[in-house]
Image (cartoon, rainbow, N blue to C red; front, side, top):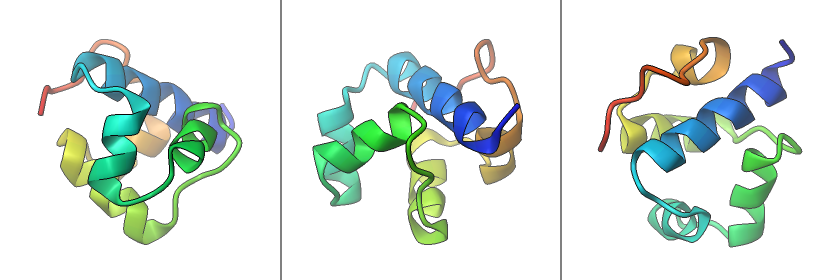
Length: 77
């Protein structure tokens, strides 16, 4: 599966599993709602620095965010 598509699916799963909305994540990461929307829609991948922050926020490894199917394995933050 394409990297952007896998990340966007896992990002959406992590959001839903943690009861967060895109605006919540935008605020926690210090970025715009539009940028978070682009991550969720598979339009953009986050920078390495932001990917680290996302990984820490959700308690999910970067490897898992980019390569695994997290639909049944997400830890709540």
